[in-house]
Image (cartoon, rainbow, N blue to C red; front, side, top):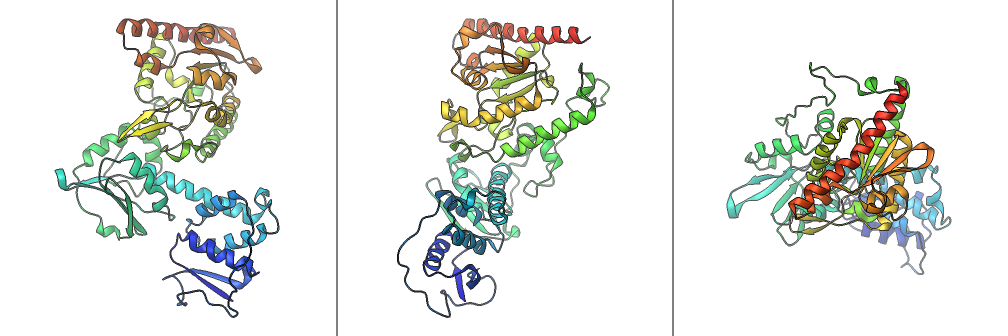
Length: 466
């Protein structure tokens, strides 16, 4: 029996070195036990065997995606992950296409573990709450987090990029990550009792979470990483003047049966959950989270923008920043209720260039638009709107699946498949960038006129249904 002792819970390099030697010595998975130094029964400091391993000779290849999968799955807290990975490696040597067998129990298990790790990284990104300790030149920003998996080292570079101009520490019971403005360092974990005191930022963070992060999501699922004192009032957006909530679907013409609405909504909710783990392009690596569409399942109008911006990336909701405020005003003037339309983006992750604490928007390129288009297609199939409004060149490219000039196509309805109409207009952020006030007012009015075409279509559909 071969006993392999790894240096830490996240010792991928140690696992890979040992696993390679074991495979090349034809040691079967049943003849290997794996543990981490300091965990489990006392074992020698180095690997011991009944028959010492010969120095490995030769080599063998495995798919690159297995290496990436192993690097992620090894961060899971499952104590059997090292053995599972070795069993897969042993099998891959003989079946190079093993990872393509989705219904293989061990393949499914390792993918589920990797998915859980990605979820935990996402939770860490959106849950961390820094508190300032000390004052002025001696101040330091500290946060406490309880990781479900060993993700602190993986997530730390994101915080170094996002909060590059302030010294911070993220304390956990596993390990602690620290940033001094130049490099990330990792130290042993601490108990929650070691969390430094200091509530100077409490009021600021209450306002921040209440206005930026999705209050309904936070209220529905309490996180131990948010203070119990942090209370967020959640009110129904569909409350009528008397204060009672009304179901939007009940007021729409040709409303499907309630069971149909529930099933369709479940499908849209499932899409949102699935998109949260999207790795189709590289943009997920720096973005805080996937920003999926939002709006009623029975929406007759689907508004498509370019991509989430800084505010949207933090909130996890589309069009909540300055461009969203411009859109809300234009919709109101055009006679369209924002609460009755579905709003989404062609690209679901924020693409930016970091400049200190500022994140500068960058336009998505064609491969990124194509990689994300499947989400738009599935949203469209789920909602089945009467009209799709493409706001800006990126949205138009997504909707028509080709480069589509704005000025040449705006101001008229264009037929899509299945009786759906499309309308092309500018993106609200274009209006914000115009330096000349007269030009801004003139272009804003053109934008409103475009949206009035959508409002007129809705009016005619409603009359025809009456």
